[in-house]
Image (tube, rainbow, N blue to C red; front, side, top):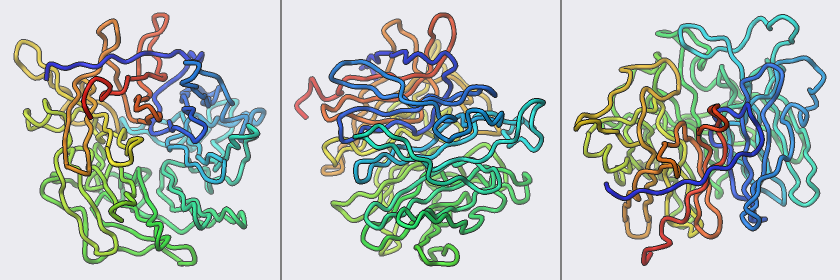
Length: 429
C-alpha cells in the first residue's frame, strides 16, 4: 500500500527507557499515562503522563519508589506490562521485573541475586488517584513472581493478575484488601521445562460484566474461567481456540503464544468479546454465554495478507483496542519489507517474545458496525526511519493514536512515546 503515516517522537527524559508492553492508556482527565521500562539493576521503570493540551510530557514517579523498595538493594521494579484500568477516579496497574537471567535464549527469573543485590521481591498491585496524585501500594505477588497480565471487575471491586514466570492466577478483593492465589493456570508457565511443562502465559484477560466471570486462555487453546469465591478456576467444555486458521503449535515449546488469544476486550453493545490471535492476525468474536467463537476477518496488514506469512514479532502484537467512537478497533501490526522485490526474511524461530526480523509498522482499523477493514499504511518517523518493538496503543478523544516505540535519541536507541495524528482526519469517516 502506498499510503504512509508520520509519527511524532517525544523524549520524556529517561535515557534508559526500554521496551514497554501494553502500559499506555488514556484517562478520563484527557491525559495519556504510560510507563517506560528499565533493564537496569539500579534504576526502576518510570511512570509518565502526556497532556495533549500542552503537548508536553511529565514524570510522575519511579516504580521502585512507589513500591517502597528504593533503599532495599533488591532487583528493582523495572516494568509494567499492563494497561491502566480506571475505576472511581483511580488508575490501577501492576509491576513486573525488568532484568533476567538468560538461559538458552530464554528469559528466566534470577534464582541467585547478583553480588550486592537482593532477589526481586515480587510485582505489586498499585493505584494512582487522578485528583490527588497519590500512589497506593495495595498488594505484592507471592514467591517473588512478577505480574504480567491484569484485568479488573469495576462493578464488584476485584482485580485479577497472572504472575511470571510460573503463571499463578491472583485475585485481589478491592473492598477487603485480601489477595488470594488461585493456583497455576498453565503447567509451570514460562519457568517450566521445555518439552514438558513449559507453557507461555496468557497476556490478556477480560471480565463479563453481567456475571463477573473472568476469562483467560492457554497455549493449548483452552479457555479458563474464574469467579470470586471459587476454590479454583474452571474450563469451558464446549469451545476452544484450537482453530486451523490460527496455525499449528506445540504448547510445550517457546517462541509463540500458541493458541492463546493475543489480546481481547469485552464489547458491551453486542455483549461479546473481540480478540485477535497474534501470529495469524485473525480477528474473532467470542460469546462466553453461548460458548461460541466465530472468525470475523483477518486484520493483519495488507502486505502481510498478500504475503501469506505471519508477522515477524514472534508473539504477535498487543496494540489492539477499541477507539474513542466505541465501535472501531485500532490495531498496530506488522507488514513485510521488500528489497529488490524480495521479502526481507528474519529468523526462522526465536525462544521468546521478540522480533525475528525487521518489518514495517502498520495502523489498521476495523469498524465493527459495518465490518469495514482499513489499512492506513506504514508508519515512519519524519527522518524516514521505522518505529519498532511496538506493543501498545491508546487513543485520545480526538482520535489521535499513541504508542511506545523504539527510536534513536542522541545516538542511543530508546523506547518512548510517539503520536500518530487521527488517521480519519482527512477522510469522510
